[in-house]
Image 1: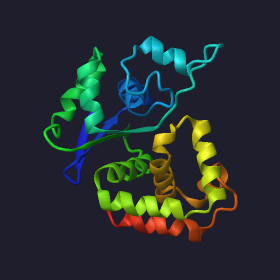
Image 2 (image 1 turned 120 degrees about the vertical axis):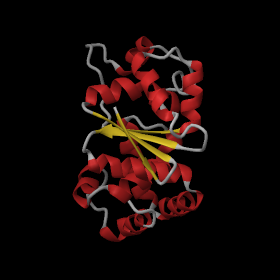
Image 3 (image 1 turned 135 degrees about the vertical axis):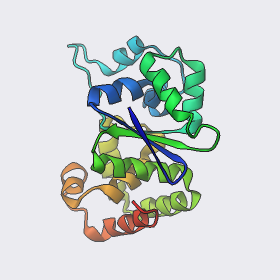
Length: 204
């Protein structure tokens, strides 16, 4: 696990493999933003986590390449859970910023595309001006486009309370081919351009 600090309040943690990333962050992340209210903001075991994300045939349907968690949620997680060795190492890493408002983001090493996406979340969480502008841009999208993007994100497992944050992060940091393939084949550069301009204001 390696750490780097962005803009004094963003703790970036990287891992050598996707396995280490997920095993370290799965419970803190689901405690913060799981779509299942039985897990979100509740103490749960790894068995309960697996029971939620595993199909009847034994296939695990949990495959994220990056994570973002507010420091306030992490503090509650570290207090309420019996931590695994990996989670304890994460707790030690957060002490670099735990005396002030901070945001944790995490990816595997050298994943610059996912890093940009997670930085968009961190700025949304920490920067009120950025968040207000992002909210305005999302509300300015057509109802049809918002519904299309929201439906896809819901299918991927995102909870309703993070939809606006996810929409701004995807539109601000994804290429047009990705957006048209994953969300809407008719999305235009004119619709995406304001999000690209906004993310540049915070140096991402």
